Image (cartoon, rainbow, N blue to C red; front, side, top):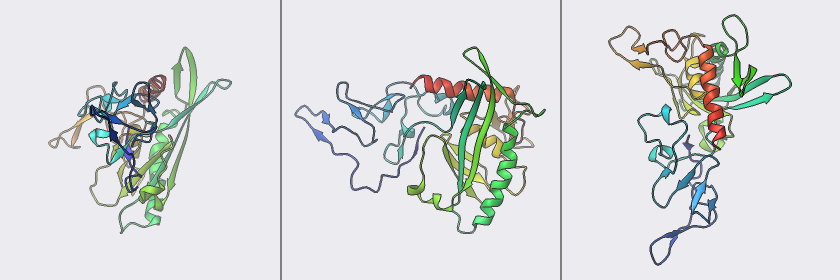
Length: 275
């Protein structure tokens, strides 16, 4: 997972020296702001080790590599470590209450716009419609809570999702990726197609009704991949993968299903077990 670096305007991020055989010698922290372990010479990110001497890549496979089939599973920041950084790899948190047997998925979706023609009122309207769309995730179509089997125990799933308008978030220095914050730029152009990058930031089309793609895009914030392929000759412009017809990840206005919740939490716990 990566985000746009807010430190690129500093005078320097890291001082490098080279010894007589040409090996680089660093201080305690490297330009990634992660501590370099002197005994092995790698930077530790809490999930994986990074070798900045040899390459801009990880030494082990990204547990979320299946979301980015066009990139090597060893890539760091899409091979662009100057412009992008990877601080924590998280997009949401899951809080477990053992007494109540509940899991609460917590995330903040923070909206802003780079457009000079879109005001705060329009942002607020989009936020309202996004909430109505994302509400489809909170319960099944019968109004019952989703469930998840974790280590042989069945938990009821709750959601704590906040949609916040912050016009100042267009300034990168105002963005704080703390593990639950996701920053979304709202594009007012007609026909714009929403997109999420790396599960934690992106650009969404302005919403003018509760019929919008926010529920689908929210799935990407939960690590879920598209389950359709583009086809300009089809009526909708895309075709769902076989077996994913009507699903929120196979259709932009599809239904949330138990398998979406299960997949999202499977990926979340897999990622955390590897930390």
